[in-house]
Image (spheres, helix red, strand yellow):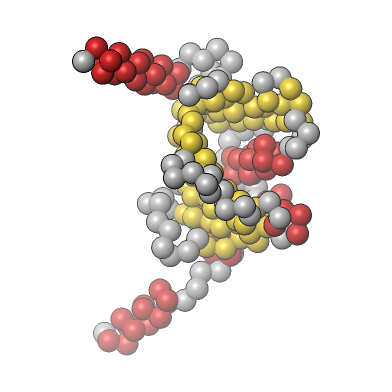
Amino acid sequence: MIRACIAMLLLLAMPVSAEDVLARALAQLERSEHISGRFVQEKQLAFLPRPFVSAGVFELDAKSGLIWQVRQPLSSRMTVHAGRVEIDGQVVQDQGVGRLMAQIMLGFMAGDLSGITEHFEISAAPDEVDTGLPWQLRLTPKARRLQMAIKYLQLAGDSALRELIIAEADNNATRISMTPDTVDVERGESSVALELGDSIEKGEKSEKSEKAQ
């Protein structure tokens, strides 16, 4: 009995290989060609005490690419298709972050991470990081060019990618939390749009109430 317990403790103490981490994630991912939902994005700048928080909806399609629609607090729309990144209809020259997000999200949606492993070393997330999700990965850039912009990416999820953290080389960081849903990004007719609208309306009513007092 004692020997069995010691053996179990030794197994638990053994480092988890990148292959094991990948296998665990791939085993749980649901393959799809289309996914949509809502997101909350927190941008933490090194010189600010609090993060800048935005929220909106996204739509990802294997053929048409990524639509990333920020609706709160200000409206902004990013589209990524065939390596072309546009923000509010204008082509962006620095396409790094947009293309990277689309590549990662498409890879996890399709259950094919070959394009990601080509540019990143994959390892288990540190033990102190606990998102409560079944799998967590840390991606470290291989190329010097990427290393100059990104320290690492941290991803977590279950049957889909739920959280993405981008730790930048300049000590800024972005945390994106995603919740799959049925969303018509073009028309905005969804429970996500209604929730965001309700949130804004409640905030406006609260401000008016405080001023009245």
